[in-house]
Image (cartoon, rainbow, N blue to C red):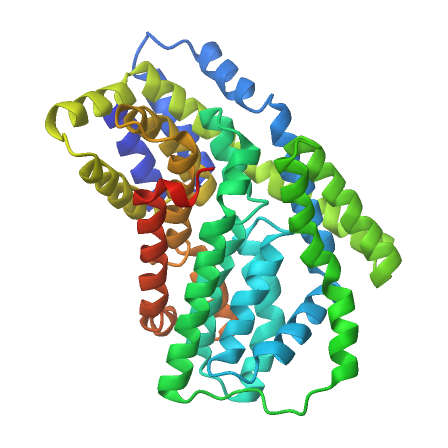
Length: 419
């Protein structure tokens, strides 16, 4: 049954069938191939997976990102960061990295980050005469910081599949996210200095800097409040998501004064559509995950590894290689939901904490977002920069080195993320 699922899924994906539909086709084909799996039970498993209270956090975090990332906030953040680092070597690219890190505290979506920041950053880079392929590469990589620091939608999905604590995952993601931010900034500085790339030369406007800094404060405060509320048990992750949406709405209406009924309607519609896509992927992945478990595939993999691989670091290396490879071809939400039931029993056999596995998985799959052939942020930023994807990929090697180094720390130094 497991082989049939893999064959049908890969065949449908190769024909450009959307991932959720490809998963559903694979589940139906597997169920139809045997009389041991009643279809009504399969549908019941699909529906049961989305009857989860923590899932309510997803649309509210998406709504928070839609309200905060539009309007004046994005312009203010870019203005502040341009004043602070735009005159350094590699400064314009460092603005992309820092903007993604700050937006990560309000969005939780790498795709939304790449689209929103790219529309603000790319015209400025073009005016400076900046190499647009490097601009696209830096933003494609930096946008994935969004899904590592809290809030993170992939971490919510992992928690749903593994019964891990969402709060613990959010807290554990802070240091890896900051390490990626710092490492990407160093890479931008090194490339900018070595190639003497253009920098911001316009005279500093201190009045504009103070105004932009004031407008940026909510984006700086929101991730801090999320971590504090979760860390000290003031609110559950779902309650924090609702509070974050109310906070972003109040800030947009009272501070920025750019929240019209039309923009509110657009933000709600955007969050609803994105949530619908995620829920469809969850249901399809739940069907596949249940069938694989029914076929005892995760247990068989764990048993094989126990019998043939005795060294813990080798098991971790194999898991990383598999996740890196699959992340190049499968959409991130689907990959999280499909891989968690497979790798969780394997991690338990070597004594790995589920929180560490979750962070390791998200970092691996984040790298897949800017790796061909299906890298989502890679294609978005290349399109915004109006350069070929191949040109962007050639500029990425310093960022791959940073990402793989952070992945190694997360994988082999659990003390860096577990408290």
